Length: 119
Image (cartoon, one colour):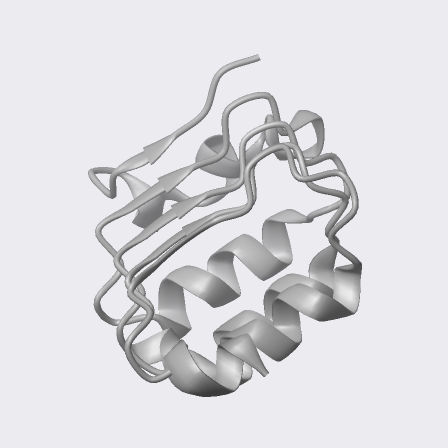
């Protein structure tokens, strides 16, 4: 009920470190939060399925800053999909995402794009 009331006005959603947020909840939130610009899912247990739900939702056109630091279950494929499908994207934080170490070496088209990655 709360999201139904504020979803159309919500521009920042910080779920960083929220351990009890279900995987499907984030995708559902994205469906009702049209103008969402900032999404922080740092240290959440999300995966490619959840991230795809976000980038295939109405908020994909307005997302500007995404923090996914410390998430271990996302792949290079879904990150590239996000960069391609979110035209307003300005920054992505992938710090400590262990599976993404080769992302930049394999994808020279990301040179200059503001994606942060640290081991």
